[in-house]
Length: 158
Image (tube, rainbow, N blue to C red):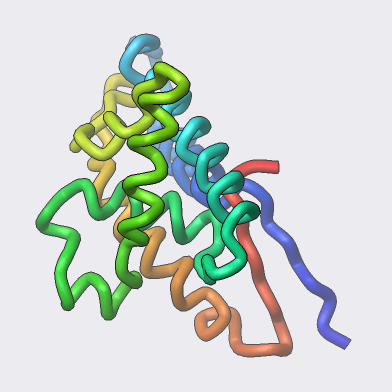
């Protein structure tokens, strides 16, 4: 019965929808900041895939790892309240990203320090709030998708 709908690119897709909804008129492209953000997001996703595939005990999806990793960079989105709403960030994954950055000479962990990103149209996106909301949705997506009749799953990018 229920056909499994798989939406690839949830984090990127939702962020892209925000960007596209704001993208009209004259474009003032803040290439460096925006592209740096997307590059760091890609790197964190790569790390999450490697971390998850290399650790059988990890129960979080790649999306949950990435979303909670970024969300928990702001102390305002941590603690028991946020853990109950969106799940606790995997502290071992946070350490894993730091170790991979050091080993590879990358700076993906800096994504946790960016509170806002200027979109291509000049609007600012509140990074922590957006990722916190997506983290809550990701945690409860099966409940929100009306149970087993309409199973939904996400991944950041294909």
